[in-house]
Image (cartoon, rainbow, N blue to C red; front, side, top):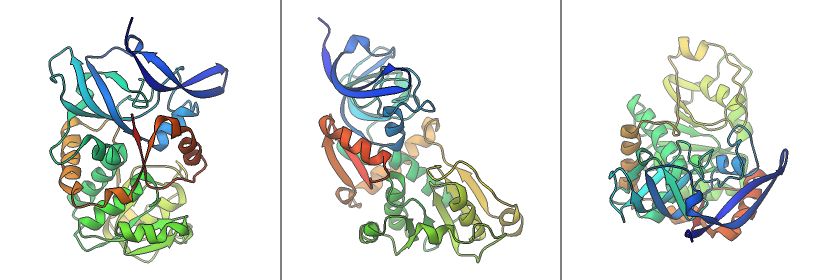
Length: 329
């Protein structure tokens, strides 16, 4: 009899009707791939919540196990890239989208998707970061590479979200004067504990989005909202300002004139973690590993088991979550 394991499975019993349940699955039913990993930790991301609710822009084939993040030990690797027992991280690519993901105790994936767990990280701490941490690290590197100096004023939008809260942590540690924008005033003290020097309401971050330009304020911006928030941030950048955009939780549309670019030399940089080349991915993970011991990660995370996941999925879809949710497999 094939070995079984516990996993969250999303099914489509009727067209566009989706259900979620924790089941026992067979390892033999996992997709093809050189690398079999025993998952110890995963994390909850907005993309996971979309997949778990049947969003066709993320997942089209059901039944399916979401989870774009996974960290664990190698069980077997048919191409010899990893030795059995090696600790590895697998994030993004197609994991948790059409390939069964980290909300199960085992995954089977191409070995090229995995990287060795960097020194300085445990399996647990790597998943406190997860794809959100990778994205925040890539945004920080973009600002640094584009010459945004430490000490400069930087805006983080969507600051209570997974990427936003980690961006506040990483940017403040790197010496930036961070202003956090959020629609959750009750989390203002928490954002200050993470390192924000100032916290503003998201309405203030959007104010003036309809104007050609705004008073120059930000040397850098990390934006996960898009829409009018991104437009206002671009218009409020100082000369040579840099905006790193990774998300569209507010809107995928961008109504904007060219003035920020041709009058102030503002640069808009897209941040993608899903298909990020492995060399750049490794550099970002090393940045996270180097920072981990100096960051108050436990202030950022709520740790749960699979049985508690349903409540947190619902909260995330309702816009009621903040920080990171770590899933212990």
